[in-house]
Length: 149
Image 1 (cartoon, rainbow, N blue to C red):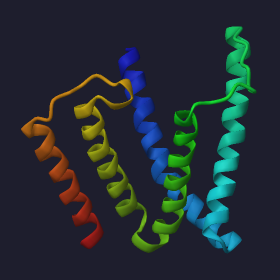
Image 2 (image 1 turned 180 degrees about the vertical axis):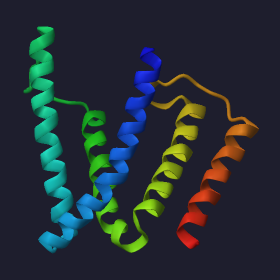
Image 3 (image 1 turned 90 degrees about the horizontal axis):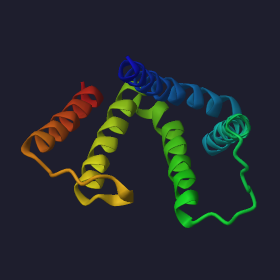
Image 4 (image 1 turned 120 degrees about the vertical axis):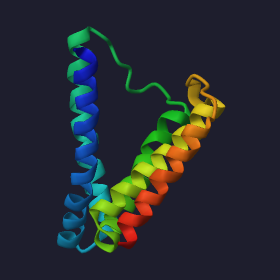
């Protein structure tokens, strides 16, 4: 049962990605500056995550030292997220939400196949099979069809 709930949470998070792009694009129109909209969106997310982290740590009795220096990898995730949000704000009005999400998922899959194959960031190594290659190519073809037709 827990596996089903985790899967549904993944579907919900994916739906939020699809909704976030046009919401941020509308914010960009209202502010008149796409990068400012990305910054506002990122700031709002950071505040919410900070509140969640605080209360989660308190509930678990964990003491978090916020002054501890973070390795570059911790900063890299935020930088990658900033590029994602900014790109989404810029691309949504130009290519549409469906095409954006199709390309986002395609990019996620292609990067994930590489991460799995090489075992980057401590993930278990998974061999590159013909099924994975064909699946990635089909997803790319589907994204192109969504964009072109």
